[in-house]
Image (cartoon, rainbow, N blue to C red; front, side, top):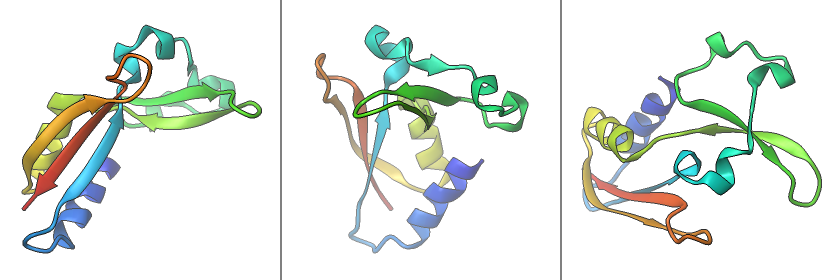
Length: 109
C-alpha cells in the first residue's frame, strides 16, 4: 500500500537514535466525527480504486470542502510499523473534546 511504502521510506532515512512520530485521526470511534463521512461517488471517485480504510470526510471550518483521510487504528499502525522494521516506543491517544481523537505512535529502529 502507499501508506506502507511511505512508512518504509521514513524508516530508511531514520538515524539510529532517531524517532518517527505518527498521528492517526481516530474518527471512526468518535460519533461526533462519524457523520462527516461522505460517499466517494460525491466527488466522482470510484471507491474500488482506493485502498481499504480510505475515507472522504466533509470539512466545514472556514468554508466547505472535503478531505481524504487514511484511517489506521492501533492494530493497523502496529502491523505497519512491524512490517517496516520499526518498533513502537510509545503509543497514546489525545486531543479533541473527548481527549482521544488522535492516536500518537512513536517509532524507532
